Image (cartoon, rainbow, N blue to C red; front, side):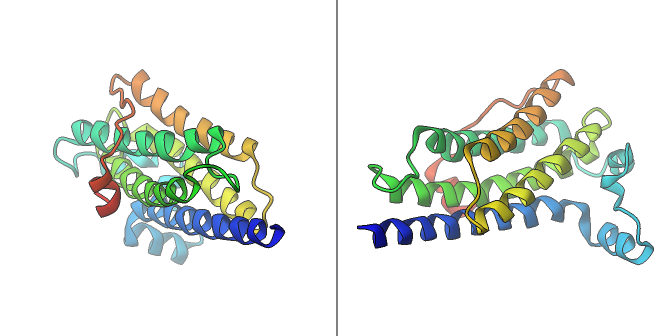
Length: 196
């Protein structure tokens, strides 16, 4: 029996690690190759990491606020509905009914969330109203990166996921404060499976 628990925990760690790693790559890819290359060449942080630098790409996306609300709402909904709520309900623990299904959905939701947050960040960078949200997106990305390390060594806890949830909620409330509320939108099974 103990062998199954260890194996189940290993599978859980691998699935979550993969989803979180993809999320980190997806969130940091929003800066674009030019910004990353110039940051590496100059030895300084990228433009999106500097205060107010997220507003340098204003006007690059058509209907930026509308697209932000759509993509951010889908990202927030996928995270809350398929990752955070099942984790809090104990659906990922060994022996839980529907655990495999919950893990698969959480893995897909992690990939989906990373993609949608990356697109929403690009939309925010284009809006003069929302460009200040780039910093909270970067903070959420850092929180995900820290969670990856903890998942890999098996030390991730409920408080770690609560911290990440706090970052996501900060993004959501900041958008609402700017007049562009992005309420949770739960993606369909097809959206999760295709990633868009």
